[in-house]
Length: 341
View 1 (cartoon, rainbow, N blue to C red):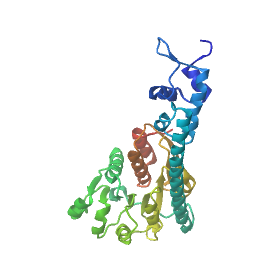
View 2: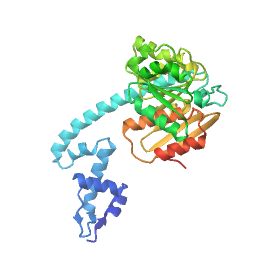
View 3: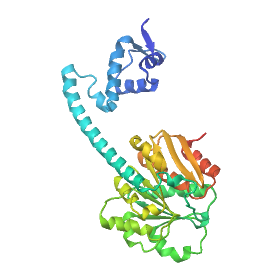
View 4: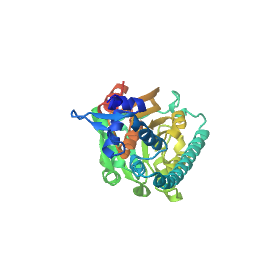
């Protein structure tokens, strides 16, 4: 037993967590050499090389499921399977690289068209939101727009605001009645319904992905900007290339734009323009709040689904610019999603 290692010692030797070793054990990738009566796991030095093989495969981007197909095969079988997996992985990386380059080029084009790259965040940018009670927020696009609207609604309710949330059809039916109502208004509009839009003057527009770049679809979105000016803010998903094409439109650029992304390759551009970058655990961003620049370095309190995470990013950017006091804003997001120091 002299060369036996505890799970902690073995994990330290490999530079990984004990939790990772437990997962490898449970999946049958690397079983502990011995399990004591106390249920503790023990390993031996001869298991270091198999463990390093797993880590090497992970470093190439293979999932644990893919690694499980390899790890217990013969050498000749491994070579055959690994060759197939590597070809597939290389193809996927190439596609991802092309997508990143396209996104970066579109963002760079948008940056170049701004007179000053960070004008969205400058104190003197000239953008002033209406009174909170007269605020109009539009959430549109093709992905989870109801969820985004619900998060913003929760934030406004948290601070005691009497918020109204309606879908576009209800808004059309209740338009006259709402003229005398007090409180911020959230209007949820499906992309397909934008064609029926006649006139609207929102303060904030959140666009959760766009279905196509057809001239008709672009014209439908631009109806949101028919009465736009310097007061208007639009929030875009920078991981959606069609949204970035809309962001470069001159009508959209009359106001401010913020971007969010889960793509680390866009970090430099996003922070330069103004927006948020997330890897699912850490959130980094640079945005404006009233006339103050805010640098965000928050941590997610819990693991969110991909869909919930991107909707949180979109809603967060909107709430930063709707006139809520900073301490109230931080308290809401801290109570729901983030560890904020």
